[in-house]
Amino acid sequence: MAAPKTHRRRAGFTLIELLVVMCIIALLLAVAVPRYFHSVARAREAVLKENLTLIRDALDKHYSDTGAYPPNMETLVTKKYLRKLPEDPLTESATTWVVIPPDKSEKGGVFDVRSGAPGNSLAGEPYAAW
Image (cartoon, rainbow, N blue to C red; front, side):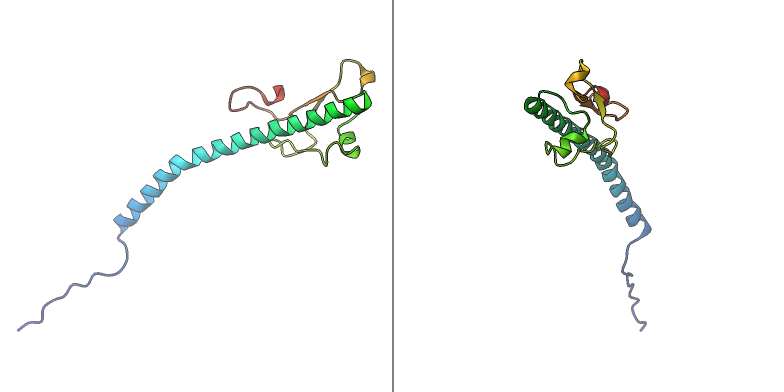
């Protein structure tokens, strides 16, 4: 009598199984990655708006206290209106702020600030208009 043949299955995955899993992962990434980058851009825009509000509030407080706007942005830090000059999150630098002087030069040097970042926001408006 002949011994029965037993077929043992090797442990592991077949090539087809691996390809199916890789396709599923690629599909999930195709959906998730664009949402991730969109949320990163939205977060940077939110930080930019907050930093502009913070700087403008410090400018208004300086004007209320002294009757004039500061001669430069660093004055807000030296007079303790700000702990440090916030960075523009789009340019990742605190030196790219665009300074807008007041109508009359005797009122100081910095009436308002704008972002120096090129390009448009997710809503389509230029960052320099904020």
